[in-house]
Length: 260
Image (cartoon, rainbow, N blue to C red; front, side):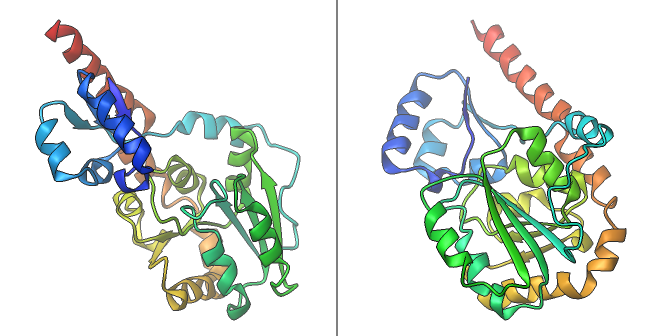
């Protein structure tokens, strides 16, 4: 069983070629969601139609509950920050952190932004962040243990991803369960997550005005948004619970065994 954990367009040409080779010799090919499956070229869908099955990614809500119940003592954000924002992902062109930094001086945001992750764009992003108004505190914490990343989401008011491409992003699912308000780019994997409309704003990753408007909305409505943290929780469990994903893979493995 071979699982494709990304949208096809995100892969480099070399990796697309290697994926095709593995697909040829696999009994089943699973994609991590419908959007990932839809991103496959028509030729591959035709060739491997009987092999391909979409199994939606799931997240471990029990792990988040455990982290939340541990009453972690360290405050990752400044307690005086009016708006606490977390951006999780490798620091690369695909994850598109620069799109957020470019608009910050045109917004009403006062608070703190923490970037989690590492990558080739780190120094470029750090240099750009020095141009941002001092009313916005910005820090880059690198790659952290998963539980620590979850602590940041539990403490944050807002989770932002202006990514150009994803599979079905686990970090977004975790942030939704943690109670973060979401600002997401309008790429198919983000749309597939489909959070409750009052807990998410979709923006064009290339439209600075839309990104600015979403941040200004957060700045103006932060008190209301803090009070609505629980709205997304049930939606995230029902649609993207880990048990649903495991059941899907179990059916796939059973079908492989029965074919032998």
